[in-house]
Length: 314
Image (cartoon, rainbow, N blue to C red; front, side, top):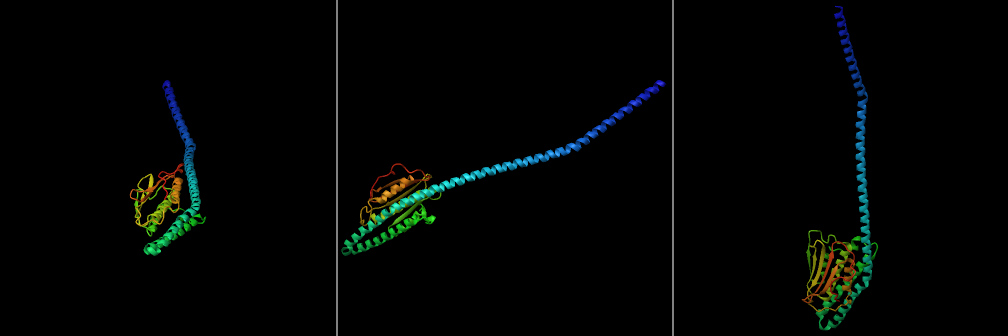
């Protein structure tokens, strides 16, 4: 019996110790959890905040890099634009200098024609008054034309000349033809492409085209009075613009032959060489005359040799 009591006592004591151990373990685990909660949660929050800050900083840095890249591109584009403007200004300045040299040729062209027509009028005034009156009309037109040309060129040579007058354009050929209709019969044939008229053609090249048509129309009025004339602007090709001025045979006698010694055509050829265009001039099979100018849309250096086409004085 004593043995049974001892066993029971031992069993009870072991159970008590086991329960105590479990209680201690539970308390310890709870303490650990409390410690982790007290320390780990703020740490996790801090890590999340730090991560968000790093993400924002990275995005800000990326946006700044993009802005810097765009600014660099804008500066490069501005530099290219300034360089292009400088090239255009230099080209226009060269053309102005060339125009200054042309003043004498233009005056000689018109004034020589006026002198020849005056001589014809002097011979016809008694024997053919009607023809003499027609000659007087042509003298008046030539005088007006030379004054307009000289005023325009003097204006172009001035530093304070308006920008819109500095460079005549392909589009201005329409008005040029309209003015020429007061002196001769001129038809305009514009053949547009899928792009704006003269798209991709630089200002100096457009000026050369304008001046070529202007000179060709002046030659028609002087050398083929009364002849029908057609100006064709063929802009359908994606790479180039073709301009043709063609007139038929004169219906009344010309007042003279090559009054300016062929300087008009020489001026056309020099302008074509300057812009790398192709110029062809010469008579037609029907007794008329044709001037053809082909210019590329992209500007290219002036050719080293003369422009293509026969050299015919007129």
